[in-house]
Length: 365
Ligand SMILES: Cc1cc2nc3c(=O)[nH]c(=O)nc-3n(C[C@H](O)[C@H](O)[C@H](O)COP(=O)(O)O)c2cc1C
Image (spheres, rainbow, N blue to C red):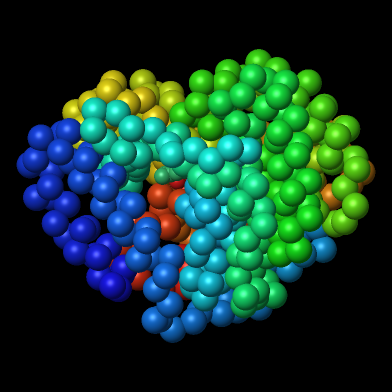
């Protein structure tokens, strides 16, 4: 089925869905998202968009056909490459995967809880890292039509099902598996999932261990970036950034969804506040979309300031994720030292309006 049609119809009927009890709205949105994605990753009946050459950029010697690609979690099991490459994405990012397969969260009869807050251009998810596990994912082919200009990244993280030490051991094992995957061009380590209770303590020793057991020992050109939370404070950012550079990581992604509900609430439209409060009270989860626009830009700008101070001797990039949805967002990113942008919530907002012109409309407006 044409996912564009599904998305547009859902967008049009969502004001009616708002009359349902909140629990039913969440049930419907969570189920609908999963069904939609199954159609989306398999539908290729649309005209290809090739970004103009001035949209392209080169990072770490790799060509990206535009400065915008999907954020992690959109294609958790490595599907959908051919779709986004054809839409004009500058990169594809698969995962986040973990060592062990995970079915994800289920609560109050809702599997993989998710809700879109359309008026606020936001979403909240409490999926809990569903994925088929590194052993299987690292051996599968992602595409048989790899496009020059749409490199493949992979996001992985320490499994929350294992104790810290064993978790890092298995994460390093996973890094080597993807290192040996011939189609993967860069790695994103997810140090920021809000839906897993890991805590921020221990990040520096963890980064040090991953650096000595993997980053320093890579046997091919495979940039490694680390994704942190958009809730990070500038002081912690400075400390982590300095360490990332010292340990020769290749970049930072800022950042993941937010759990700072009280400060986000004012950015949710009054009509959607009750649903926002219901979801966060009953499931928790991470907020994405427009409420992160300013946060992510400010954090990236702060990271760019720190880079000026630290003057890394190797190529190190800032990648923005959070509230990216318009051409102006891409311009603002560029002005604040961002090398590449990722989008998730904004992608589906724009897709509901323009379908397969989703990249074209944002890259050329
Ligand atoms: C449904 C959903 C699932 C997500 N899953 C992941 C994930 O597996 N790994 C990850 O690093 N981020 C995940 N994220 C966070 C996004 O990658 C992104 O960082 C965040 O949503 C902010 O970007 P946005 O405002 O463009 O959505 C997820 C976000 C959503 C909405």
